[in-house]
Image 1: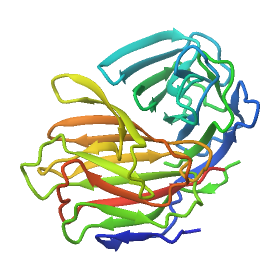
Image 2 (image 1 turned 30 degrees about the vertical axis):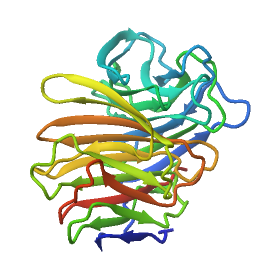
Image 3 (image 1 turned 180 degrees about the horizontal axis):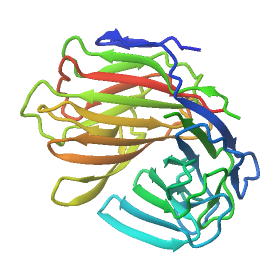
Length: 190
Length: 168
């Protein structure tokens, strides 16, 4: 499993041991024709934190970029809030959205973006199985199109003490995710 | 449901002597994402805090790279971008402290999409910075060259660790 790796200009140190605290739970890669919804269900409560690693593109034709809507346990109530810090290549600004029906994740490429370019996001969901806390997430995400693009830092809140057992992700403005988009869920032990 | 442990350390490179670049080569395509964690300091204390770390893949020296970034310097927040360059930036470092840059390289081995990277970089004396970066190539990444915008030398003790994450 450990690949051959060449290193130059230094000495080499470090362990090759496989860490045991970060595990792959499930992955969805979108096939031809796209898909409108990504769902991770039956998430076990055996980890401390979750991480979702996203590389995606939507069919939204109006802009170069799109965002994602994330819901837990199919809760469609106005129980979510987010705050964002973003850079658009010219200036840095901030905005929020409270009492919304989903957490917003930023940011993925859309139909007008550079061909073959996909936006990325790393989403951390903390203490997801705890039944005494509201759930907090954070996100680093962005899109670069060689001349345009945005980078985001996002914090999100789900006002529920329920353990998270399912996560649903949909495009914010588009109607489907493009082929080759991938969504990978990982668990981190604590 | 879990498919097993991952986030595997592939290699750690601790500089035994100063070097201006570091190369990871012969990277196998057995993972889904790569994570590169750099802890760097330059040999010259007067190096400007805005000296940027860059990556270049597979020896591609053409103008196929670009990035968009934002930062806070303790006074204000700002954003900028660089397009059609021969490397893309992922963070900043200086000659005063050991600075941290963590770079996520998504789906690095696929041969269908361009390659996207997300980075968080912390230069305690000056900046907190985030980057999104694009390499306009569908080639699988098999080598990574790490350098900096002024051609300065990283001091001995600087570390570069490459991890692989395999999805289910």
